[in-house]
Amino acid sequence: MPGIDECLLEVMRLPGARGASVVDWTSGLALGTIGESPNGDHEATAAETAEVARMTAEQPAFARLVAGDSADRSGEAPGTAVEDVIVTTQDGYHMLRFVETAFDSSVFVHLWLSRSEGNLAMARLRLGELAERLVLA
Image 1 (cartoon, rainbow, N blue to C red):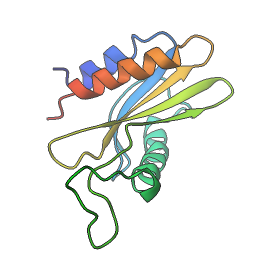
Image 2 (cartoon, rainbow, N blue to C red):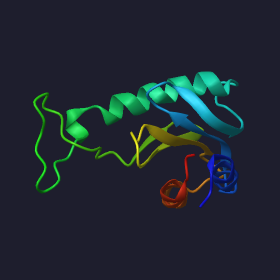
Image 3 (cartoon, helix red, strand yellow):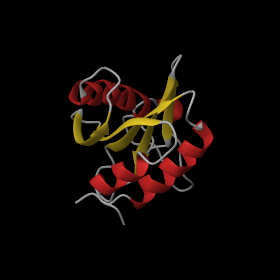
């Protein structure tokens, strides 16, 4: 099972990968980075993508109720229904893949993929596999 550095190295092997990071979306801190950053600053990119991840993960429209679960008093459904978020730009894709963890599951992998060189479907599948195997220590 790969750790953060190994996971990021594997992500960068995807065709068209320009940069990647593992980010804690509650703090906006990058736990690891590799390659290029869309704005030239990995820490700023981590904070910006964390806002998107947090906004998505906390919206009731994306929540699911699992059989046997019920919403708590605040109206929030238990767990997160969001697997990933894909943002398209003119020249690339930004994929945020949420990582399930034994503790608070507030981590995601951000992949910046070239639109002309990358394969979005393949990258999404591979990123999902890597996120499942990622070990956070």
